Length: 297
Ligand code: SF4
Image (tube, rainbow, N blue to C red; front, side, top):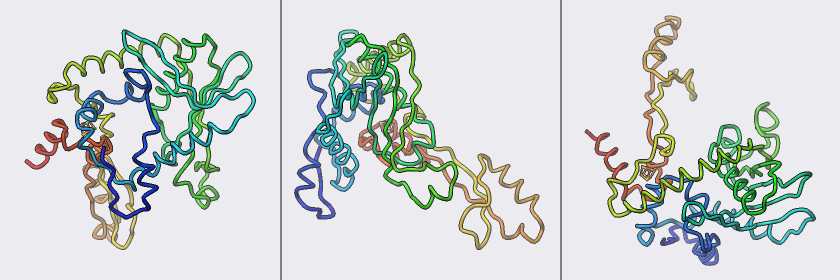
């Protein structure tokens, strides 16, 4: 991966961005790798040397790494920082790096630090639940201890104190502890095996992009098309609908004097992860390139 410096930031930051803090050690896969779509993983491995990222786009991952380094230095009784754990499953070695393990009555509680957005803590994040439950499964397998709690320590990078004072459902502080439901051991093991199998199969297909399993709508972060009713002189939409019919109906039912000021703005849906190249491989991905061709027809 090449790190560019398009905005001329100081070289020490560039050097930091180039440094890889993350290593999966002797493992075949990390937990986050098996959770992510096989298509992304295969394409990233294949095109790693050609991939490019600007240093300014690495800020949050740099700060994430920095937080882990700082956390490692903080020694607190009954708390274990940054432990890497290995588990063999179906001839594959899986590794997971557990941010924090706290000794609690009857077992261990696991916590994971995330630099994230306010939106993330106000909405469901199934990947947090998957990741922490796989860690719990690994810790239980390796240490034989009961897992008594799972939490995300969410550090909200876009938090606003003004909104916290004025909006009742807004997170009240910049750091939020998010409780994660604990799965049964069997459910997690089934999940791990299914993900490992998927990645093993796609490894065999690594050289035939067309045959790689396609990313699902959920994995592509597909945002549906919506229909916003706008009013002349007003910045925000009056209402946003899922269908054109609903938007048209609102206008048809409006007072006659208002009707001429209303219009429908079509907000076209798209696969956000592909279009924003959040996977980093959209230029080499046949699934996304085919999608673009279909859109241009
Ligand atoms: S471009 Fe889209 S479909 Fe292709 S690998 Fe990335 S997320 Fe998946």
